[in-house]
Amino acid sequence: MISVNVVCVGKLKEQYLRDGCAEYIKRISAFSKVNVIEVAEERCGDDPSDSEIKNVIEKEGARIIAKIPKGSCVIPLCIEGKEFSSPEFSAQLEKISLEHSAVTFIIGGSFGISDEVKALGKIKFSFGKLTLPHQLARMVLLEQVYRAFSISNNSKYHK
Image (tube, rainbow, N blue to C red; front, side):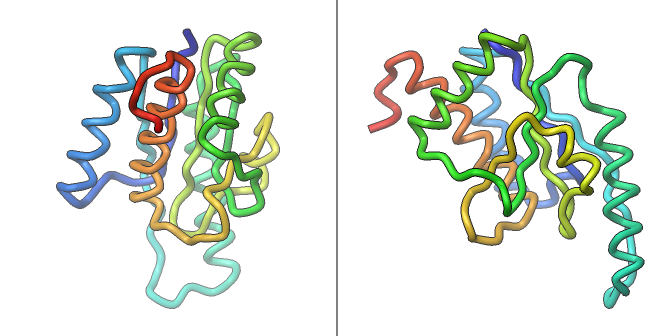
């Protein structure tokens, strides 16, 4: 089965998010190896200019790219990405597993993901038009990956 990597900006600050992510990582590990790779969040002032935001995105993007495992199918999470139902997402992961031994999801920081990182994506994935804090997006992604594996393995988790 395919190995799952999640490269994300920043550390989880809230205990409930750490607990939730740990639970889904434990569940996913029944189906796949899973690895969460955190990269440092770039700091800026409370009211950054457009150029400061661009600088943050580029610096975080370089850190993200450095952590993407070689040969992995890259899937950045971004607002302009494709929306999938849970069964469609499961089918997409199955399809990717036929061509790749690993998939790497990318979750950017609070300002998003650099165009350079997005360009590496085989597909771009979106949770829809909702805006989620990037830390919560990590837990939602892990839950959906677990759900996708559950669907593929005919588990009762997905109803």
